[in-house]
Length: 378
Image 1: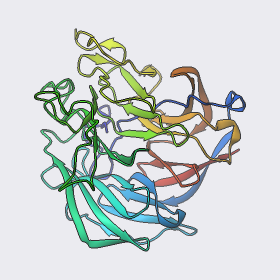
Image 2: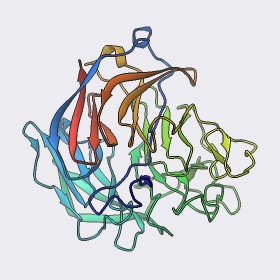
Image 3: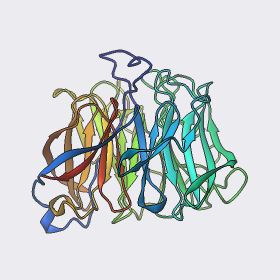
């Protein structure tokens, strides 16, 4: 997640700038989706610096607030916190409660946050009858962070049932420690682990670098700067990663559901498709499926989801995303891993920091100021 430098390195202690964007659409995009959908934003609740959302038990949307609380969206807005770790985290820099996820049976709940020392931490709770069981809490994975920015922090359960964890390159600027291309660190990577397969977790035997000397077996893909938000297409299983750029280019990376992992997305040798500070393109570099420069007010891509809901048929199969500084909601249409169209959906959500997807595939937009809105048909 990327702090908007043009305003300040830290947008006070009350906001956190998103570094993100996931951009891709599905390979099975129907013909009906090849038109610009007409949408509107319907505000459904107000939160305190919301950072992430996840579909939870009973079809409810659970919402993480940066300071450390989790609340559930109901018919009358957000309820009282069902989890509060506010004494265990801080909102300095880009820190805080950054990601939440449920396993496929809603039997376990995962949180991703930075602790008071700034260490990226993923914890697990058992869930019984839709309620978190605090006494079952355990730490699954930790990673120390050399700086207060580029923590990443998004987490998702993949179609394979494993837990995927996005970590930024460690922060500062320009990847000073070379973490993006270093397979000996978890920083600058997308990880894939089995949280229930061992203590504290197991590494899947088919992870791409399990048998590579000196490499961390947890790594699924690498060469990432700050993958603030990523998602899996609920229709195809394709992976979409929004990686925040350094100074010039924002990018969206894509991998098909058939991927065996191991993709190198290029950072810190490349920024998008462009060599970074005289860098050399890696031999097996996987370029982004979409990139955009910052000439039109963009500064930090906010990744979203491929729309799989029913309310907006013309949007189905398109990848919806935005930019923290620009605020315009856009979509990508793709076929066979190639972008065929980039659409402006005609609405601006302001400082969009995250998207969320409910159990029915409908999408929600979160702004740093606190508004939670659903994308509805116009």
